[in-house]
Image (cartoon, rainbow, N blue to C red; front, side, top):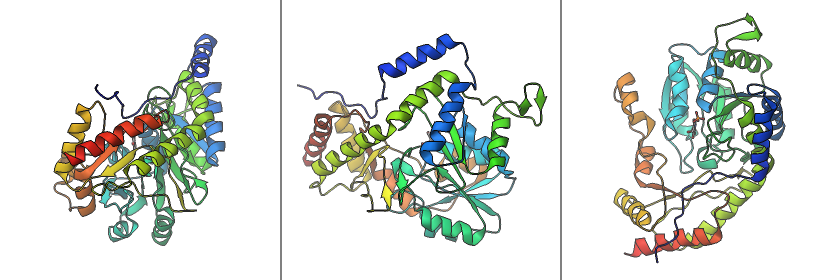
Length: 370
Ligand SMILES: Cc1ncc(COP(=O)(O)O)c(C=O)c1O
């Protein structure tokens, strides 16, 4: 009998959320109302930050943040190449240049490599807490302090993760979150937010997202319509209430994977949390094979057995055609270029059962001995 289908990810749903959606629909208030305000306040309290400002996606929120920061043409921003392409889109739209850095063996930006790429034009660092594991924020802060740089944490994949007991998103002055459906905290559609300790930046982003309005018919600046809506804010509020449980379930699934795969010598498992330093939230569970061929063959075999996998990401950003068109050929990044050929994301979501994890691991073992 064919193995049960195991998807790569599955969105958390509940009857409470269904009920809340209906309530908001019937309430007749749809944009930037009390639900949005309450979601912003709840998320700010959860993270331990002064301000959260919602927008229509991470990409939109960071575009507004970069505008509010006054980033200008020619500014350089250090960013890992191994991340979702949107991490670099806003900076390019405001005229800044991404300076691509290699990752270390935690799949997050290598602070030593980043240091080598600092020039007189460098203004900031955008580390990505990739796959739900915090980047080395202590080392990055040291670098930022020494060179007068700002940091924006990319928390799109890391809602609730901690570094030395503090939640990501509160570790530096600015951060940004995505609520895209596969994320740890979602709103049943697109959505995003910035978190910031700056009153001025928060006020600017609030104004920019809503046509530059200071008041209903008073426009202080030329802005955008990148607002957030009440229905999705209600979903976000409910998802936030259970986020700790959902993350605990992801960690439990990661533990099952580790136990099942511990003896498979040809696999590298995700880096373990360092006691007292990182607490990962396993947005993804990414294994690494010995070779590109081994990865491709395993992915194919799992697909045949009804198991969905992914590669995050198959092409690093410094090699994307869009980037080559803008900047020509860029320097090689050895570790990044090696890893993208060999990584494989396994099914990971809060509701995954121990049985499903075993199904995946048994299938992996069968495939690798073939
Ligand atoms: C690391 C990272 N940064 C940024 C983004 C962009 O988020 P959004 O789709 O909300 O714009 C994503 C999501 O794809 C992501 O995974």
